[in-house]
Image: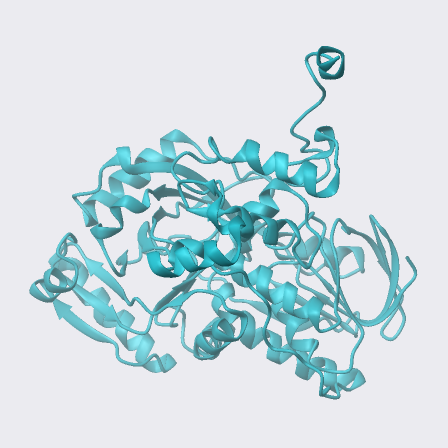
Length: 491
């Protein structure tokens, strides 16, 4: 691999994929380099999926500006890419009278940042909007929305690929040399040359910068654990519910977030960890999350939890410093031609389309970015069988019998949808890749019924030995061999 590009984007999270997709509007040769076997394998898939409005970020900060701009763009972007987007609204709840003044402070920040329709409501209004929620008052944020973070990231990457960008998976960066106009990037899958580089490596953005000789950045990993509540309890609430943010904390407190698929998320926690790979979950933290959530939602039953997960925030402030850390978006003067995006934690998902616009302006300033007439904004997506009426489902089965074969009973995912996930535009062939594209294995049984069927489909579709099928890429193979010679028994 010795290809030459105009721009190389390092990192296949939501921000990197948004940049690749936006730049694919222009007559540019684009490479996106991702170290994992798929996009959205880190922070971008392990968050709350909230499209934030910007009422809780300091006025005048880089975060605030990008948050508000990105939020205004998100609905149209979701429609273009056929990604779920629900404007469910949010309540920031005061549990005691002493917390009510904090609601006024949050509203003042939101008003200054240009967030529309904010209002303070009393206990009666809270009960009217969310009968199961306890609180003496709340900040009502009607424009807040939810999306599916990994679906958005995948959609952005697929759209970029459709429009000519090269999405290079399993291509972790090992070395960067050269200068603006002639960078040389050595990866696990070969070497490429690029005129410009955008460092959007998330948790590893400081390490990528150091590969190029830029040593001014430091990222601290902060783990956030979540508990997922079964969708059978989606009736408990309709809006996002947050507590008043803890003073001096590393996050917004433990909140309750409905998802676009009907589950409720409890979390996240906030715990600084030493290793950027330490996304383990613990029963102790899950118990704390559920106990804190019950203060807001007393009807919550821990038995309704089906699983948990954790994501890692890329913090620009240490646990000792605490408090607010702004996004760092800059072209370090010691190395022109390389843009660094550091500390893009929440609201990074919301800010992604706005960051992508700014990166296009930066590219245009350096090498020019001429729009091309062939840009295709949409993408093909399979019909989501579970979302159709019974009559439409019957019609789909008549037209294609593969819609009549359920692979995942919990999520009502059909063989047709799993096949579409298997033959995805990025060529991902992992179990997790199929899971995040179809929702198979995401239900209450967590793959107990469907995982073996998906393994069988993968083996048949690509005539692949079982020993080569992996959970998430090299080193995560599911099988090591047979316990007996099946061919001999067959004879």
